[in-house]
Every structure is written in C-alpha cells, then in structure tokens.
Amino acid sequence: MKKYLSEMIGTMVLVLMGCGSAVFAGIPGQTFTAIGTLGVAFAFGLSVIAMAYTIGKISGCHINPAITLAMLINKKISGKDAGMYMLFQVIGAILGSAILFFLAKDFVSETTHTGANGYTQVIPAFIAETVFTFIFILVVLGSTSKGANNKFAGLAIGLTLVLIHIVCIPITGTSVNPARSIAPALFEGGQALSQLWLFIVAPFLGAVLAAFAWKGIDTAEN
Image (cartoon, rainbow, N blue to C red; front, side, top):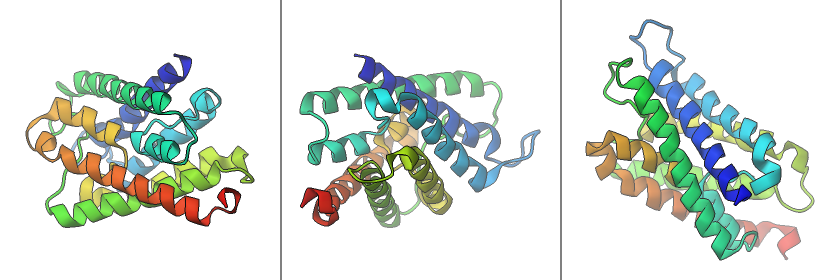
C-alpha cells in the first residue's frame, strides 16, 4: 500500500505543479508575466525530478501509467502491482486536478482551469504523442536499467520531459501520460473529454513500442 500511496502523491504533485503552471502562469494576459512554453516545460520536468528523488526508493516513481505499462511488459513489475499503480496514479491526478480547479475557478479567466490537453488535427497529434512517449519511455528504461548510472536517472528523466514539452506543447499541450490527461479532462468536460481517447491510446502505444525496442537493444536483456 505504501507503494501505491506514493504513486498517488507523486502523480498529484505532477498534475498540480505542471498543469498549475500552465493555468496560472503559462498564458499571457494575466496580472503577472507569463512563463510561456519553456516555463511550463520546466515545471513538469522539475516535478518529476523532485518526486523521483522523494518516492523513487518506495515505488520507483512511475507516476505515469505509460511507464508502468512498459515496466510490466519488461517484467519489472507484477500484473497486480501494475494495475494498482495505474489506479492510484489516476486517483492522484484527480486529486491534483481537483485542487487546481478549486484554486483557478474564481481566479483565472481563461477557458481552461485544469490545463487539459487538446489538439486541432488528430493525425499530427496522435503521431506526436506516440513518438514523444516512445522517446520518454526509452529514456526511463535506459536510465534505470542494470549497469546505468542510476543516481542520475531522475535528472535524466525529468530533463527529457522538459525537452519533450518544449517541442510538443504547441501540438497537444503535451501528455505522454494518460493519468495527467484523464484528470483535467474530467473537470474540463466538453472537447477535452471527447479528445481524451487520443491521450490514452497514443501514450500507451508509444510505451509498448519503447518496451519492445528496449528489449531489442539492451545488452543486459540479451
């Protein structure tokens, strides 16, 4: 249970800090200076780094169902734990979105109060979410693998997420994490909810591809 609660807390922090940066400071026109794409990207990445070195020793700090799926495929986690991880990740994301929605509903005048993902063209969005999740999961698997310099894994993973957000925010707002997308969409409703399927299917597809790709190239697996 401690592992599951750690995943819940970690995902809550990721959603609250990452999506919160987009809601409160990512958009110009407020009474403060907007941090823009780069600032939001770092908010997500720094959240992952902080949680990696906080709960990593307890649960491995997946805080992302796509990472959990890849770990399951590569037999780094049991089926039972994988299911519970995903459940508590979504619960944590909902808690983070609930806090953010409460704070933002009377404070932010923009259309989104949760930092929900969205897209205008489905094919580029699907390709982007699949490819960037593939890259992200590959870094996760590589940096945490046997023989890697695991002390810096959290830093490598967090900075990779920053890089991915810099490129992908203009396309979809960047998900690469189904839990991160599910919770904001539940509170946002409307278009965010109708487009949610893509932010579940594409990251999971990217995770599957990355898991099998890593099996093929990792010398420790062969």
